[in-house]
Image: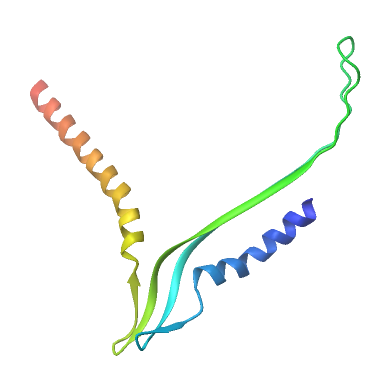
Length: 124
């Protein structure tokens, strides 16, 4: 099992690079290279057994193994070639997906600061 996990872990850099930067393509006469954030995770397990409990039940036995993994790639934009050189163009959907929680947290923080300042001024 450990050998399998080691082999999977060793191959992640080539997977990650391939998912993070796709093959260049031409769209509408412009060459672009898609860009994504790639995330991976792996886990594994093993086991053995024989745990006798005196006075309760018969002696136990065991075996085991297991493993799993997963990952995803979130497309964040593309590098696009043009007359002014190569520029990064963000994916608006991914930008909004990231901006909503960030702006919500910032709004919550500002509301807390304003409330604390108001309460402090009323007490003083």
